[in-house]
Length: 156
Image (cartoon, rainbow, N blue to C red; front, top):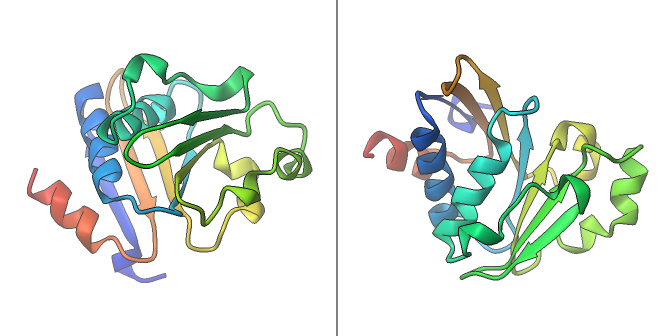
């Protein structure tokens, strides 16, 4: 892992979290897998909602998939929103058929990705969100090449 593979962003408000999600949606390509890691209330679903909205999904349709395990949304690109929180094991994630979505025409968002890390593609983007205050967060993004996202965030 090189310094270009890691980007740490201070999110001072929910608006910043939403802005990051919008940038991710603008830059994501078909087949992209994005793992989201963070405690309850960290902003994983808010980030997912902003990403999906930037791809043309009605934000009122987007909710945490905790009770459904997978939600599918149609936008400019299909979005497959997984939640591993309630799964008993990574084998249960496999049983959902998650791997069949990877590398396809859509974008896969996996909340609680830390519970299924060994099931995700090696080139998946991993975003860890750590609360630092009531609305503030630190987002650490690990990905093979973050130059485009780094430039977009710095120019925002």
